[in-house]
Image (cartoon, rainbow, N blue to C red; front, side):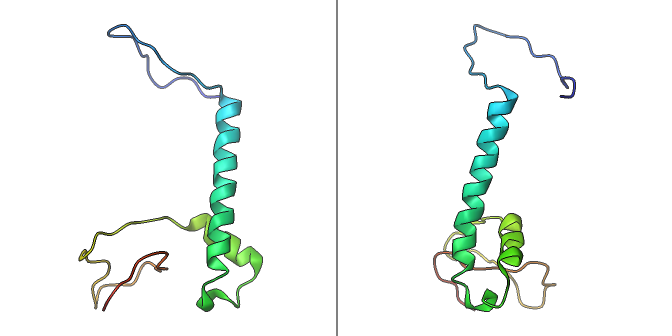
Length: 95
């Protein structure tokens, strides 16, 4: 409930949609819960992560960010610092 950061004035006739804060937060929380559940199911199928507990996998699921790459696009370069861990969800890669 912080004050508005800007004043917005219609520059022409405007039709808009509005959504109250409580409903927006509920939708966002539901969406995050569904995403985490989907990621959790995926992580359960990754052999390298089989020794992790449910809580550890949930922590990873919370931190995952989906990134897409086009065919032929460089994902990592040999010799560069390894600051990220990649799990291939779909598609194939080559070294």
